[in-house]
Image (cartoon, rainbow, N blue to C red; front, side):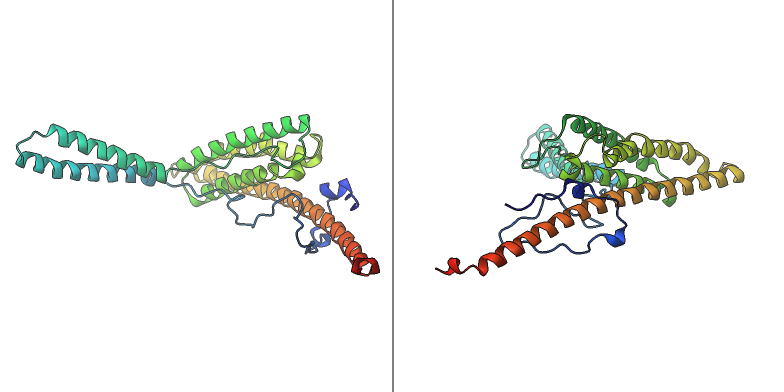
Length: 286
């Protein structure tokens, strides 16, 4: 039986990044890696999807449905008049075609919401009750803040504000990705990383979004130069604080990956010793 990895290794020991192992050792054929998923920096799982504008989600389906519906009505109407029938049937058919085409295109072009966080995936250990309560609260807070950011993005003016909103939404997406990992779900509610994620979703990010809402109104051209300059300074401060929060997420992610790497190293060393002993055993060849 392979030795059980040290539980403290899964939580990480807050080692500097330079000390974290750079490459996990290979595992034996037929073995599966430990529970966890590593996302690329630009993976859709940790980067929010770019939202489509109202001209695309509402304007295009309306115009497309109207044009096709009108064309259908004219085509059917001419045929109906030639045949001596009325225009009621072509009108109803044109309206129906317009509704179907417009509704279908609107469905295809709609802005899709983020994937929900799945707690307690099949095959994972049972989540402690207190931890589940904490994680569910974080998921709820994160969902509320992401909806709030999406509403602000529709009214955002200027690249600086849009960049800050995108950074905040990316931060919440990374928090959701961590909540879905077995490494976080297996911890206690009092764990430092769990409490850090709860603080980000419940206090830090909402406070920065509040400050952003209060600041955006002073960026209008009618604002005095002094007030506008102070508002721009506030934007830089908000952006810098979001960067600091992102670095904390980096540290949590690196600790989880370092813990998985150490567990794989222990497992690899056991397999190497076990199968090397078996290969040198003369009774195996009999």
